[in-house]
Image (cartoon, rainbow, N blue to C red; front, side, top):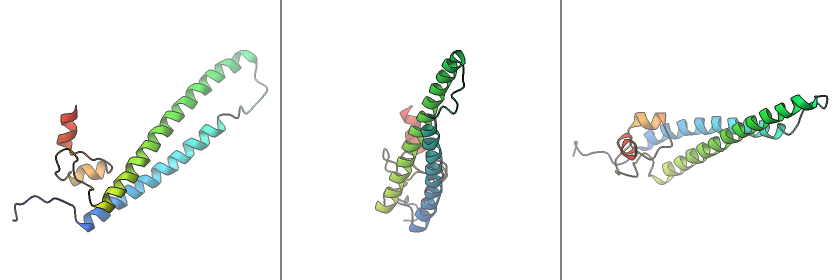
Length: 127
């Protein structure tokens, strides 16, 4: 029985992962808030005393910057959702179990990528 592979992480181990996830979620939500504020301020031109020719170039740069900020915000929002889903898996007891192999994902991988649902072996097979 000592050689039998563990099927789930203990409550103490899950608490460690939950703490890691909550810290990352707080950081992600703070960055998302910053990005949303930056996007909402992009509509403010700041000055009306700009000549016509340079205004066109600034508008293009502003549009590109706004698109980049928007892409970052979308990525952060997706990351936050993945972290929230990981918290739900902790609550329902499925956290840390690879959805492909059914084996435990290594602690090292979960510490680095706490929202993952794939062991490193399963992730490498996907490529």
